[in-house]
Length: 156
Image 1 (tube, rainbow, N blue to C red):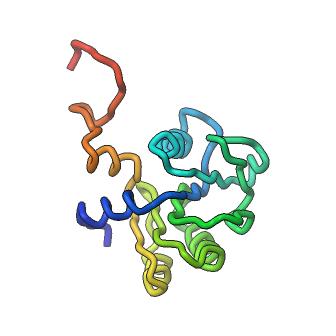
Image 2: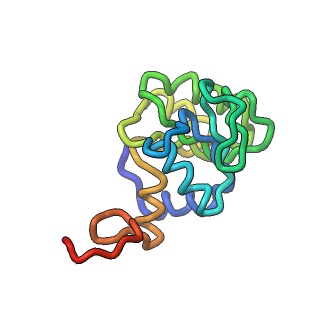
């Protein structure tokens, strides 16, 4: 199911404090970078996860090689990986974070079996959506063009 009510998504975004972003990039033009940056600017604690960049600093946190390297509690795991890579990520999240509330799969990422496994453990699941876009839409930050660019232009 990828048809989520606004109330469901709003509740997730309001209750979430710490987000582990799996597959985050160090490249500022990559969606995983600017979504993670946006979430950090909105007050979320963002824990970046990417084995290729482990040990580097991003948004005030050290990039971890895997979810198993995270010692602090995580409310939400945001997955920027191909759909076929989702099951082991969900397993690691369920094993490592006893108080996990949400598994969020980015646009284009879906895995119904992994979602069902998480839901059976009482974890909410969002598939094929972006928390940045949903935050902007639900909290009044989207502009006419769909993006809050901060640029004023006479061109439409």
